[in-house]
Amino acid sequence: MMIISLLFVVVMIAGIYFYRSKNRAAPANRYRKSKNTPRSAVQAEKENNENHFHDDAYAEKDEHDALGLKTAEKTPHSSSASPAKSSSSQSDCVVVLYLMAPKGSEYAGYELLQALLSAGMRYGKQRIFNRHEHKDGRGDILFHCASAVAPGTFDLTKMGAFSCAGLCLFFTASSVEEPLSTFDCLLETIDQLIEDIGGQVLDEKRALFTKDRMVKYRQQIRAFENGKMTVDMFE
Image (cartoon, rainbow, N blue to C red; front, side, top):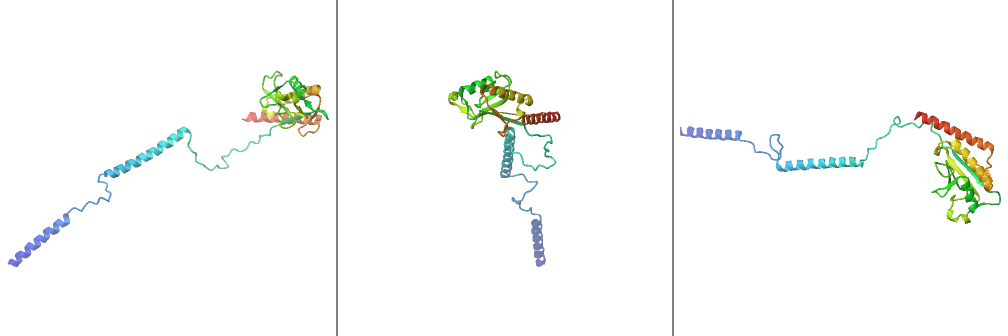
């Protein structure tokens, strides 16, 4: 009987121990994240620093955008997006004529200066002479006059000792309002210079300037004017 009682007590103690072991709460794992557990102070500080870093980065980007310092991303341009070159584009018409001194002589000093001023030429900032819309120097520049000898400039302080073999008169059709009228004015100026100081007129290749070459120049200028008018209509 005693043995049965002791055995019963042992079974009871074992059952109680087993029951408590089974229902004991599992130890918390601080290295495992749980949705139901609050964030630690370290984790909260870390996330706060990360958010602060990204805010500064975006603020710096916005500031660069406002200052116009943003670098645009390079994107490939498709051939269809690239504007095609206009078929109406044209080359400029450049008029160049030379007035060369008679053979064996040169244009010199104050005589040349007086002839240029009398023809309506005015000394300009580029140290060459310009012909304006009006002979007194008013209005836009129509054409220029440089020395035919390099560097092509004039020094008014040394005109007494200056001499050159010829003059170069030139303009571009795109730089004036009425290219054909400017060409006529240039020819009239050359005629007046020839009356005052003499000389021979050569074309842009320094060949004799003939009537045929003059007609060709007029045709080129007129073609430029017509082409410009067409371009202006479609702009």
